[in-house]
Amino acid sequence: PGTRQELIDRISDQLRPKRFQHVLRVEQTALELAAKNGVDAEKASIAGLIHDYAKQRPDVDFIAAIKAYQLDTELLNYGNAIWHGLVGAELIKRELHIYDEDILNAVRHHTTGDVYMTPLEQVVYMADYLEPARDFPGVDEARKITAKDLGTGVAYQAQHTLQYLVENGLPVYPKSLETYNAWVPRYQ
Ligand code: DGI
Ligand code: FE
Ligand code: FE
Ligand code: FE
Image (cartoon, rainbow, N blue to C red):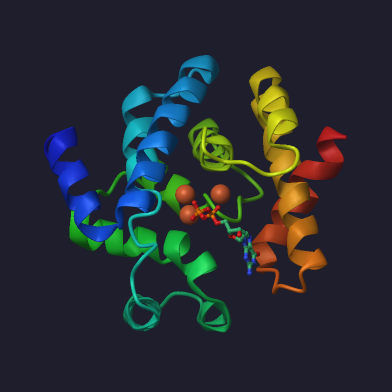
């Protein structure tokens, strides 16, 4: 894409207004966290804007992409929550012509995290969790912790997301468990 405005136009074509507003808030929060943590502002902005690009695509698009791009067929056992980042990154490459792997990895890992995350990936993972309209028990503590130390924030989110999945009997994508194991014991 050329300008930020062109990117915004492409994204707002793909998303309902509420989701689009969330994306703008994630961009702003990502820029704040980026400034604090020495992360490239332009990459944080682009990754924030595109992280949910594929969120409102029908399941058939993801299933077709998993097959066409020969992604892990284990993905077929999951749904939109897992697909929109991991598979969404492939749609972003082809449709938005964004090929920066740092940015694409931030999209890929924004829901599940990963064992190794660059500072940019951590920023996007946390910005999505903490943008100003997020309201869940513990969000203020999570914001405080993340302001002190980004990695401790990542551990907080990994722990609480896994807890939420287990409490609600939801399927845990293996990467979410790997993220928990890599980050939570280390930061206790
Ligand atoms: O797309 P957003 O709503 O902005 O945020 P997100 O992409 O971080 O998605 C958050 C949701 O994803 C949240 O409801 C928990 C869910 N999630 C995270 N890890 C897993 C998961 N859902 C399943 N089934 N399995 C996971 O491992
Ligand atoms: Fe998302
Ligand atoms: Fe998230
Ligand atoms: Fe999001």
